[in-house]
Length: 280
Image (cartoon, rainbow, N blue to C red; front, side, top):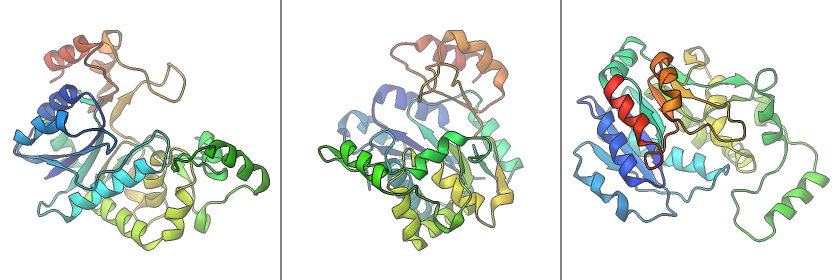
């Protein structure tokens, strides 16, 4: 069983290096996409690792914008086209951290071949906050003055948008662990359906539903598991998960998940030390 970790990162090079070290395993490689808005130099220390590769087709990423999807697609394409052959691809952020040993994760995937582990709630019934994010026009992907005024005007004069091809909208969290079969299907669908791509360019936060929606409306639907294998605490409210601290240590220990997010090594290094000692 061969695994490729894909990490999307934009800061905290020291924390990213710590994450890469914890992912190390003979059957796992690590691919890193660094936001094109930032300088690569602070991250160049990762080049000394034999099984770490940088994504070359970097994208400038803005929160909530379509370019996060572009960065993910570019990265997946590089992984799939590499000389290395994988069974699974695991998407992480630079603020994630494993809470079980690398071998346990590899063994779990070996015991569950061909699955697509991702948060995939039906928008119409279980995740209704997704609906306005596709029904309205959003211009976050376009960096021009007064774009939000133009956005309000578009939504005032144009009717609500509808999903292309009557596709069923599903999603919740962007992070996933997918079989290569699933990734290959997503990339082929992406390439063959420009109308779907263009529709998603005007949505908000599409990274949280694009990939789930493609698979849910595909012959691979039955391979989907509505579990992203991550511990994420949304109780703080707002659009970002809680930054985990030692107050969350017992919950991490009990969660039985393989990864957790998000962490801040500069402000709360003690919880990472706790994980290293008690969970890894």
